[in-house]
Image (cartoon, rainbow over all chains, first blue to last red; front, side, top):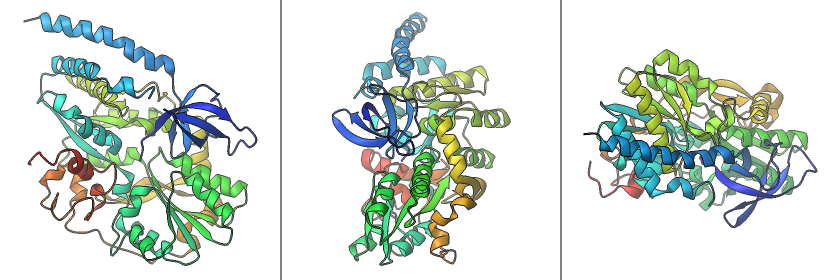
Length: 84
Length: 364
C-alpha cells in the first residue's frame, strides 16, 4: 500500500493546478499521474509516485552519495576484518 | 529501473550485513513499521543476512490489515446498492467481511471496480453522473494526500456524485500503542519511508525521547533496509535514541508541505478502531465538516452497522509483532491467500501473505 515507485517526468499539463497531470515513465511503462502536490517538479526529474500522485521529487545527489559511501563501508569492513 | 536496481545490489547488501555484524555485541529487537518493508525483507531474505543477535518483528503498517471488519461490512453494504459504483484498491477487495468480500459482491452483480488511484474514481464520477461513485479510502499518511486530493478535486469541480468511505490511520499513535504495551519487546524502529516523504521526520522525535528508542527513517529496497538496520544498531550499541534519516533521497526533515496543507484542509484527526489493536484515540483522519458532503458513511447512513473480528485469526498479535505467522495453527492450512481468515493473509503487505508466498518451506 505504502509502496511508491520512482518514475521520470516526460511532460506536464499545467492547465489546472488542482489536477496538474503529467506523463511519467516507469522503466518503459508510461502512465498519467498527478503532480498537484509537487509544484516544484519539472520535466526530466524523477518523482516518487503512490496511488497516482507524486509525493516528492527524488534527490539524485543523496542517491549518489549512498552509492559512494560504499567505498568507505568496504574500507571499514576490511579494517575491522583485519583485527583479530 | 533507476533508483531501484542499484539498491537491490547483492554485493552492497553483503557489505552492509558485514558492517552490522561488526557493530553488534548484544541482542536487539527491531520493528519495521511498514508492510512493504516486511515483504521486501522476506522476499529478498534480508533477515537471513543478519547476525543472530538481531530479531526483526513486523509492524502494523498494512492499511488493509488494520482496517476493521466493521468497515469492510460497510463497504459491502454500499457496493450492494444498485445506484453505486464502488471503487477500491485491489487487495482490499478480497478481505473477508463478516459474511462475504467485495469480490463476492462483484460476482453477484455489484458494480465493484479495482482502481489504481482515488483520482481514477473521481474520473469515473464525471463519466457516470447518474451513479454514486464511492471510493474505499484506506491508508496511512502516504495515501492521505491522494485521497485528500480526490475529495478536493470533486469539491472544486463540483462533482456531487462522488464520496469516500474513509479508514485513514496514522503511524505515530500506533507506535505509541505498541511501545506502551506491557509485553512490548521492540528496542528500535525502522520508520516507514514514504509516510515520512509526506510528513517528514519531526513527528517521531517526541516518541524517541519519551520511550528511549532509536527511530531510523528507512526505505524499501534491501540496501535501504540494511542501512536502516545498521543505523538503528549503531545507536543501540552507543546508547543513543534519536531520529535519523537513512532514506534521504526520498525524505526531507520537514516532509512535503503542499501535501501536509492539503491533508489538513480536507481531514481532521479523529479516533479510529484498528483491527487487532482496538480503538486508539487520535489515531486516524476523518473528513472535516466542510467536506462532510463527501463522506459516504453520512451520505448513506451506515452508522448502525457493527461487527466483531473473527476469533480464529490472530492478526492482533501479528500486527503488534508478538507472534510470527507460522505460529498460527491456521497458517497455510485453514488460512491461505485463496481462503483467508483475516486480512494479513490477503494484502500484498500482510505479514502472513509474505511468509506464505516466500517462506512456506520453513517450519515454525
